[in-house]
Amino acid sequence: MHILILGGTQFVGRHIVEAFLAAGHTVSVLTRGQTADTLPASVERLRGDRDAPGAGLEALAGRSWDACVDVSGYTPRQVRPSAEYLRDRVHRYVFISAVSAYGDPTERPVRETHPLLPPAAEDVTEIDGDTYGPLKVACERIVQEIYGDRTTLLRPQVVVGPYDPSGRYTYWVDRAARGGEMLAPGDGADHVQVIDARDLARFVVTVVEKDLAGAFNLAGPRITWAEFLQILGAKELVWVNAGILKAAGLTFVELPLFRPEHGPRSSLMDISTERARAAGLTLTDPAITVRATRAWSQDEDLPPALSPEREAELIQTFRQP
Image (cartoon, rainbow, N blue to C red; front, side, top):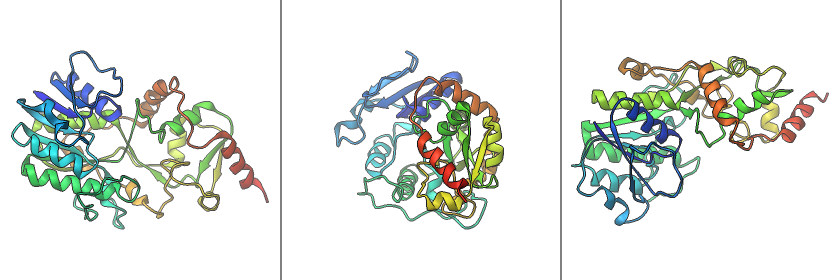
């Protein structure tokens, strides 16, 4: 099959490209070409800027593909032109959305049948914690409007693994590897749930090969923080309760992935993947994800989300009578 990927040189897109190539398909990627990539020479590079009015999609003219995978669509201003331009040029449009489209549901686990957030207006272009979910919903609706049952919507949990530049998951992997006394958030009973980028990528290939329509949640095993840190191999843990962390002003940025049970957005750490697993989603053992991520990150020198100095200060505060 001939596959077009909008994006494709970084992290999630890179894994998707590699998965299609491993399955024997040919791949074209549309990127701005501003970042060096290490994709195989067999991948066709097309240049375009989805934020550029008019000329941004000219490289797609006169071409057709069996499927398009949209990895880089975050706003309606990006998604509507590409979806409309490709309407008669691709059979299936696979849009990479996010579980943030659900907001913060009260009912758990979160399934594809849960209500979505109200969509953002199509002229919204600012992406932040408040607009990200509504923008994804707006983009989903655009694709459904144009492609109908030729639409596949994938809503992944936090995506992790090699090539991840965000530092959300790699912070914990690298911190555990560094050793020494380590701040552990909460009491160990809160939950964490992520999805290995390679599992997501293989499922993208599955939905294209099987021509699967509809929405699918994508997430890995739901485990406790105690289990997560054990898998990481962390030894000298100092559990600091959520109240102290909140009083200290720590956010999801400094303590990535940590969402105290029943706190804001903790419902998104309880995602059901029953539908995707029935369709062919397979999951990597979390220990394998940790090892693969560390093998990549140990040479990347990623800045820690929580500095060693701040971590030591918080531990000291916790120990004060």
